[in-house]
Image (cartoon, rainbow, N blue to C red):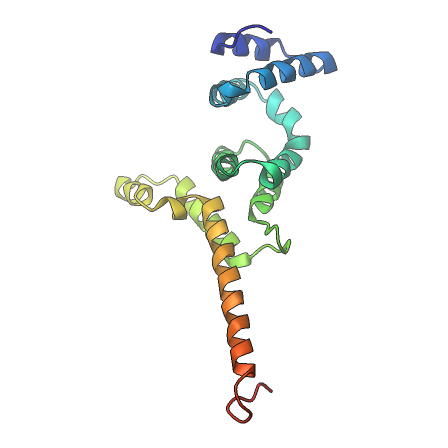
Length: 189
């Protein structure tokens, strides 16, 4: 395998074709050089901006890729999905229906499969606020000073799920204690 460099990656991306051999060769090279993942992602993103072909070719598989990373990826990688999605929404990289599907992947609760509406609305509102074309420098500065937990949609969603689980646990404990009170002190009907 050839040595890794940004120039080598740019060359490989520019020579990439739709053939199975071309894609497999690049995939193996990227896997071999995965320790340079941050650089690879940066170079790849810059190459994507040069032409719409990549976004069009990625569109049919991007939802499954998001699901895979959300289900099996490392926490740091999952955290970045929300940021990537926010950028794609801001720049209208994909159609709104596809961006909504990606948003649903990030908002879906793995335990129940339900989409908690309040969190989804809050995430959407934060993304709209972050993406607003505001000329107000003071507002932008105040937004940037918000804690990371509020700025990152994935962190916000995980915190919501954690607190919801805790509230459910406390309710069960309370119900159990109330039902164990002597007769007449509490009527559960």
